[in-house]
Amino acid sequence: MPLLDPGDRFPPITVTLVDAPPLEVPQALAGHLAVVIFYRGSWCPYCNAQLRAFQRAVDKLDTLDVKIVALSVDDEASTRELIAKHDLTFPVGHSAAAAAIHDATGAFVNRDPVYLQSTGFVLDRAGNVIVSVYSSGAIGRLVPADVAGLVEYLESKQAA
Image (cartoon, rainbow, N blue to C red; front, side):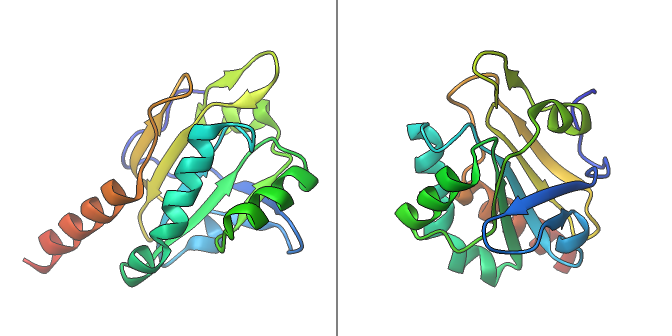
């Protein structure tokens, strides 16, 4: 699968959530701007920092009508612990099939052990990619300040 470019339709992905029905992305996000994050796992300090940063930015992003969804290959128990550890209030999925996510989005996959490399997407209200950020390793990821700045810029262009 080639990487997703701006303007591409984000492919349908079912996100398995802890204690909630599965979330169908991008359908469940329709009508909102959205951030979709694939993170390496609860063991990754950079991923923990990224998820904490997005949690701290939830109110700001909410005022901009930006919804957040995160996903990893972690099992349900590890994901539940991660959510509790950081008091995450946005949907965080578990048990992702790395190969299927790769095939759908082009996200890079670590081979041994198998996990998704950090990947982030900003989607428009119709579920099309505005920005895609692919990393092949531990560093290089989407950050909430960049998302907020991008959305504010795009909104100001539309208002003009």
